[in-house]
Image (cartoon, rainbow, N blue to C red; front, side, top):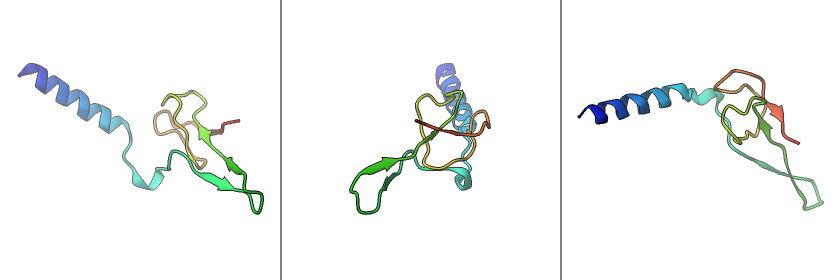
Length: 74
């Protein structure tokens, strides 16, 4: 019983630390097609501290974990 309670508390704490503000969320990746060329150029942004591992975002903003500005991935 203690293990179930402990696991539940950990799960709730993890979910709470993820943010959950839908107005600030972005998609993981978006491909932009160049006009007439047919090539796909993807612009991705990532936290410079890599708080969320290799997770990338389609738009600039701030990291939901450390609140640093996202930087363009080259």
